[in-house]
Image (tube, rainbow, N blue to C red):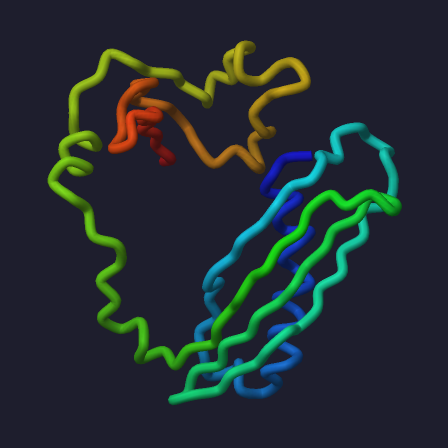
Length: 169
């Protein structure tokens, strides 16, 4: 199971419950995922492994200044085996909150890495066997979120743990 699917299995019930708890207030607000901590305990990898069951518990709702913040505890089980656990939060915000949102800042070092020349190129649209065959493979085209990898430095990045630059058309 791709991680993005497991993540949606965990988060979709929260989205529904968040909207239900906020009721009519959500019609005039922008909904955003706020924060999460999670632990994957095992991975549902075999087709037909069984029923994956998600329990989402609404733990708190706070309303202030036109904003609504909600937090959840989530557990995903395969049969009785814990698969994924998460503490997560969502918010409903007035549209004006996002009108002048600057986003995350980029340091000069990050800008240099993003614009640096590189001899490395993997065209994922050509579906190279190295990345698309076997049990550990990239997702099929509908879930593949990258078209190409344009730089790779296994010792790069601020912490020296690696740097990868990718593109999506």
